[in-house]
Length: 493
Image (tube, rainbow, N blue to C red):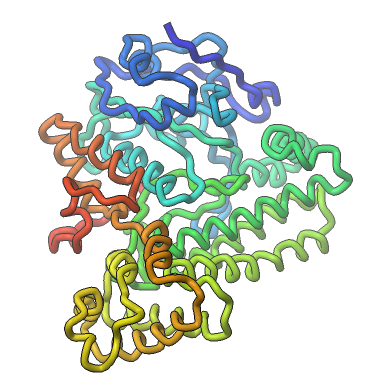
């Protein structure tokens, strides 16, 4: 039987914060995939999860001792408009488990209707569950804070979306499921006492170092603002677009969460909109930093009963500087620049402008840049330099690259780092593999059409170590196929 020992500290906050519910189990469940790395986080062995109890639990047909399933209530700003009550409409917080690396919330997504389902069926479909299962691990593999995925199950239950699909359940792990919208709900319902109660809970559970400090609420807000600024800088650096940056999808501790119509950049395009439902482009790639600040402002408004307005404003002013500083550092690391120079930013800006003008694949360019030879270049030798030619051929205007490469090589000459060391460091910074939408589509088609789940496990292994060489997956390091341009994802994804 299971060795999981459950607690649920959130359930002790009281009924104002949630609704107690039992999961609606999937009929005839099938275990699609188990993530061994997440299994370790719970202090278990993968062999334990192949036993009958795990499938019954992961498909919502069994509740484990000590668990106290509940649907959390929250509100939030969705595409800029305030929605007064949202909440877990298709998921349940099962409880918490302490593993080798600390405590994890365990959340069952697709567990059936709740009081917050807003006329929905509360189910997740296999298609969207595969996307979240893989992308949460891909983001973690890139070194970015994220929820994690433990397992994926499906059952013989039809779910009606644009077409009839199969119901699925995802077990998600997170350090916290408290959102910006959790505070907004109690603020806008005129319950400052519950805003304080929730803030005290977050501090006690996740930020114990500031507990009892005279400015602990200010420190909580600063932590949220700073972690959000750094998180979005990391998104921008790897070319990740979240797609739905509503305040109810923003983690109070700065984790990437709620994967829906996400997308990674193919050709570099600051105007990239990954969400087909986002007709106005509110959550386009280039707007993510600004939206992060907008969301922090919404959180600030929700905390005005705890923190003076002027103090909130001062912290909000720290967001932009921290974001820009972090993004500059990350871009410099991608270029192998480790010393501060006044021309770093202009070199980066000119590169990004050229990548956009020439429709250069963002990740492929930076991976190839790792092999850039800063010692062998001159007007005559560049044509014989394969690493240089591979980069140059990515550009429609090759002379434009030549011009930038000359500046880049001059800048590298100011570094004290050895070429081999720079290359090794850049290879650990610029991933060879990112989770492109067509890769998800291949796994989805095999799973839905052929009941073949092997590609999910294959991609899971690949995306958890995206900086490494994977000779058996070399096709996924190439430019995406032409048919991928026809793919679109929306809020239903």
